Image (cartoon, rainbow, N blue to C red; front, side, top):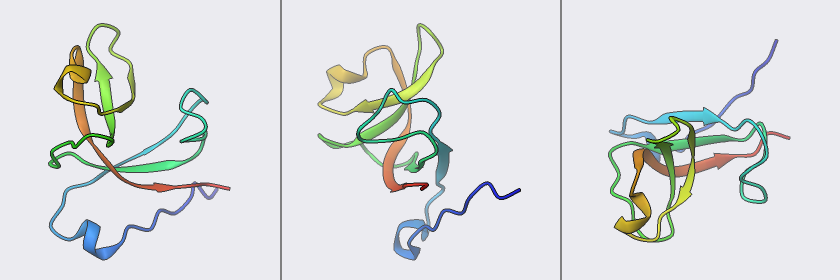
Length: 89
């Protein structure tokens, strides 16, 4: 069984501890689709417009959030900033 392969550019991976997650469901379409693999950097400081991998503290559900400023993080635990999206066709 082949699950898929994700290539990470060397300059992105160098000296970073990265997290890769596979999207399940369709709530983030048209940005992300089921099966896409998103690579996150947990050490990166978010900037406006970044996509973040978060966990909603009230529901304990993971998800994606478009960062618009520190107010958008209320009630969220941030796992990392998206650095690469690999579309699985």
